[in-house]
Image 1 (cartoon, rainbow, N blue to C red):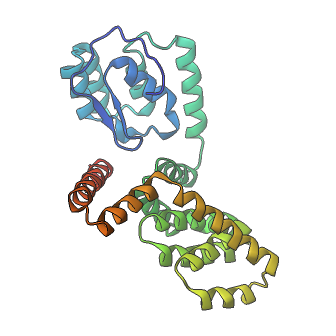
Image 2: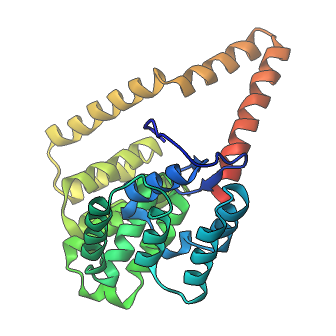
Length: 278
């Protein structure tokens, strides 16, 4: 949880899991802490009967689970759900809870479009790129998108491109970065567009776009230099070292070590995939 939490209640043998932030909680105090410190990503769909049953069976807080179920039955709403959980322990004072509710009220005043954008941004923040891409696409295809100016729309397309870069790949991201720049005229979008062209080895397209957008040679060279720095950082990363070790095992005929490391990597990827898609 990132903080020492004094827990007076029962410790669950089976933790409750929050997929978005990849967080496990084991007590009512940790549950309170999680909701209080992640209020910007808390939505009504996090409060369901599965959580109520965990509170009942794993924490053995029968009365609190009954109260929570009553609120769910009546579709009471986010504020009531949060208060119900936070009042399950003495972890936060009444003043702290009131301050949190005030912050929630400010969020409630956001337009539906801003709420959806905030949701998509949170998916990006926690590296849930598939969900982020879907949410940005839904926003861009919605009727409300007509109220956005060119810069706002372009910035959303830029964020979509980042999500696509981490899901579909370079080509899809390149097209979206191009659209983003043509709408928001932000050099960061142009820079990312050129990055993707370089990385996908589209040299002819890159040269043509440099001419099309009237990019100076200094700016083009700056992009090349920055990309080289990113390459250097990637080569120094732990992931790159693993790949280097695999190649070394393969080239030197150390097949047992090669397959052992390969199996470990595959199992790690499987666990990450299951966690992100559970």
